[in-house]
Image (cartoon, rainbow, N blue to C red; front, side, top):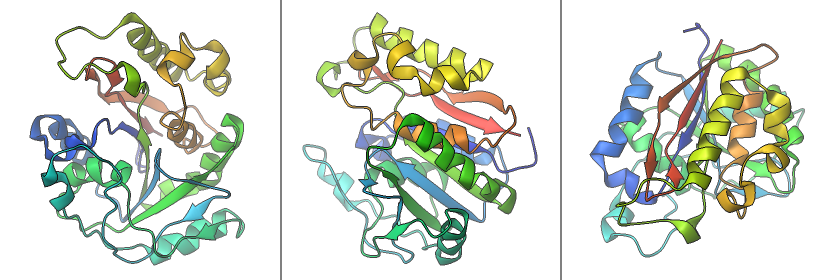
Amino acid sequence: MGSRTPAIFVGHGAPTIALDADKGAPLARLAGSFDRPDAILVVSAHWTAPRATLGAVETLPLIYDFQGFPEALSRVRWPAPGAPELAGRVRELLGGDADEASGRGLDHGVWTPLVWMYPNADVPVLQLAMPAGASYAELYALGQRLAPLRDERVLIVGSGNLTHNLRRVDFSEREPPPAWAADFDAWAADVLTRWDVEALLDAPARAPEFRTNHPTDEHLRPLLVVAGAAGHGRPEVSFPVTGFEFGSLSRRAVRLDG
């Protein structure tokens, strides 16, 4: 793999991943497969704002933005340091075109995977909200503006899911993934492997069963930012986590190197 810090997309799935050592283990292995970053910038499916917006640059209580899950989830603590220096650098890269939400803690799209990747909560973390209503091309361009961070030992993480239709999940997990989910997951893997950016940016029109997989597409959007963070060359693409949970939720993680 290249010497630059990779950019990664992780499928965070249900919040219960934070309590599931079996599902957390591949994420821990992923974090151990490259040099420890100096800071982490996360784009989560669970935060959009009118413009690109930076979260807190100090440690705040986590956001438990879910209902109906085990009480133990609300007792998870992960007090990662804030990243004020990274916030300043992101503002610079975005030309000052970023708002601030100084009182907002990290949502579950951030902490549920990172509790396994960096369990000691000792790497500074900054969250960046995606601009609401941005096109896929605009999200990709946002990632391109952030790409220099990868040469500065910053890990750029997109957190969402390649397939995400909560009305069609199977919590019994007795059945194999349905064709509409498996086909979409395979299509995305193929497009990324071939690095067909044009197809990726046109996913709503080209991907199989797009609206079945994404009745709303907030869980796919972080992937566009991560793809842009590959920069202007063709990255080395790998998939350190694959498979499905709850029937149709893809667990696929995407790693971009080089």
